Image (cartoon, rainbow, N blue to C red; front, side):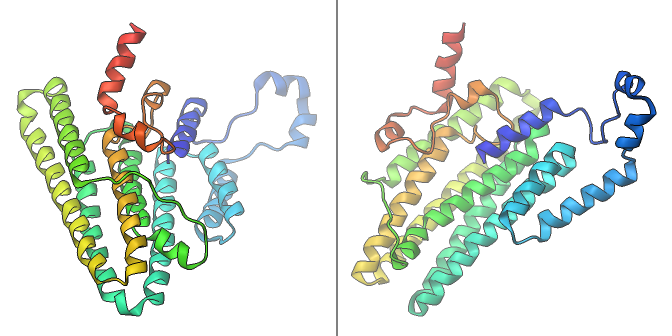
Length: 310
């Protein structure tokens, strides 16, 4: 998502409008009728037909290379509404791929299908809570991208919760964190995240908007509760699994907790349109377990970074 958002930001900076560019006046004068004959001016209707054709490829093609090319071209010729539709479509396509992999897993384990599906319901409840929190936040023109980003993070957690279990059964190499991540680590990170959100509201919003701050605070606490319910149910599932399968499943749980801890410590700041100085303060996905545990939180790192700039 980060790379996609950076790409979008570049498009925002370099593109002036959604309409096709008009020919350069001086070039017309130099080239005269010859230039006009070589390259006819694209009309608005031509532009729209070309755009509609790209949308058809982007929405319907099963060739990933064709989809990628169409995406780039749509970004180049698009406007805000188009960007929102592109990232939303990408998100739905991504979620569908994860759903397909999940269905393959439960088909291979019919004896555990009921439990796995009940666990998925816990994740879906958590997923809805993530959306509720994001919708209460104001991120201006980056709002739609931010919301999609939070939903993608949630899908990443769902994928982490079962993917390695499926991959190892396909005889693929997998890796798990060596560190054991605990509920206490997640609880501390949630508490710090809520405190920082409250500080932001207190610093940047008026007394008349404190009701919004309280609503947002409660929404995060509800998300936190549903996260704990999801992780708690995974313990129930684990106890019912065969010993060899349980070991991998528990490894998936640990990986999911690590992923969530990184999201919380970054405080969702890497989502939407971001500046270079924000990107430089974020903890990367590739960080070591030690770097993750030592990272004090995005707000702390950003404050120190800003002081150094002064």
